[in-house]
Length: 287
Image: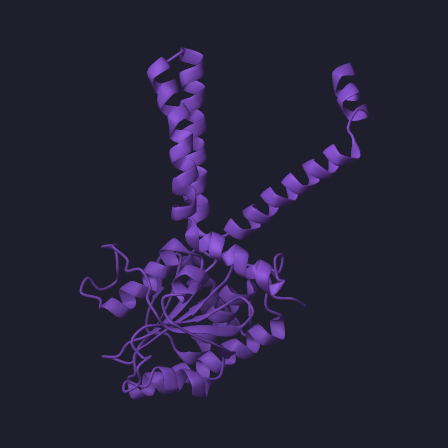
């Protein structure tokens, strides 16, 4: 205890500033990695490295200890290469003056986004125009949005219908809507699921991509089949198919806003059943 008090008493203003800067640096980096796939990878690397280091120290394994000491240099080179997307995003936020900006979408904007999506999906389904619409929740989708054409526009039904018109250059891919309710990218490339537990074994690429993005992130994906015009929704790697507009609206608002969107007993029952299938928490509607 005395040693702790001695250390505290001998901290100089410059040392305090030094500690504060280092703490802010680590805090900023952790925010930059929050919700990304790279966060899991980084956590795995740290756990493995620390576990091997403790094992080598306790058991006095000289060869392993030598390997770990020399691996530090290799990691210093490898880390910027592995996490280049995250570091680029961090520097971009610094340049835009939005380093600590992680605000979510206001409820009224979320409702507007969902309504516009429903309007577009109804017509896309009627015309049998295939579509993939991804809505960000907490996980970052920057690495997937960067594979498409950057738009940064307001979500409108007319814009979605234009993007997914079969004769346009942007129809073959996914639209990504960020947590601020902005349509950031079109024609984005999504990862395909390798799951064999899909409702239909011969499911096409569009549905596999819609399920794949929800396996690696917590995003919500709306899928319109080009062959049948049927509407599906994917979340947590699960797929709910043949959705009507009202049920899709309820599921989207529940998943996108984390709250039950309706008090109608019939729709609410369908919504709760759908949420159980999706693995989402059930919450009581406000009021």
